[in-house]
Amino acid sequence: DAVQVRPLPEGGFRERFGIPDSATVFIYQGLFSTGRGIETLLETFAALDPARSHLVLMGYGDASYQAMIDEATVSRANVHFQPAVAREWIVSYSASADVGIFISERASLSYRYALPNKFFEWANAGLPILVSDNLEYQASLLKEGGFGWDAPLNELTSAVKRISEIDFTSLTDNARRYAATAVWEEDAKAFAEVYGSRR
Image (cartoon, rainbow, N blue to C red; front, side, top):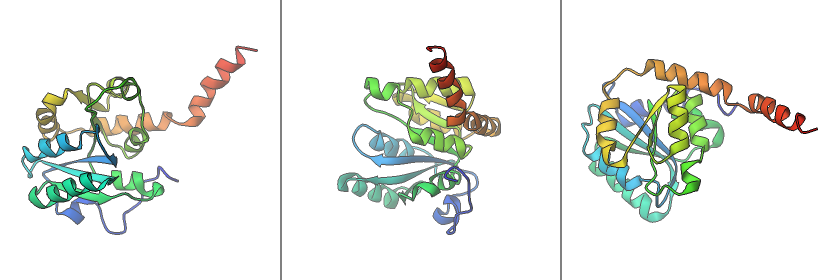
């Protein structure tokens, strides 16, 4: 049930934030904290045309990050804040965006090979995903599955601008196809084979 897309009682991001149909809606979701590129995302979207690219930050963080985001929502027409939602609503909220975006300013070994919940939530919502190129494992899955992109941090603005100009219907289909196979029932077959071969 947690990955089903349901209508939002208060409407999607476009209706609630007045985002034009001409714009691509990027969503960051999760913790607002050091190393997750919040400042870089705000700087990136400040340089982009509100008619083409919008950013929704959905989640929570400490007071300093919340203040930074609140200020950006006032001063920048294409930046919006959505408070964290209950687990069973995450995929439904994500589905009212167009692209998931996640970058890392510090590529520790843990980050390079991490596969966070948001990756699967976005795939289940049918969203293609943009990650920074230092998130190696996520980038490899996106390339292999054909449902996203990676970009160096210093090229993030041009990457967002380019993505905002294309039709990614096929990537949406690929994201849903990946999500349909990225489930425990499929992984269990591999575990059973590995452990069964050790008897």
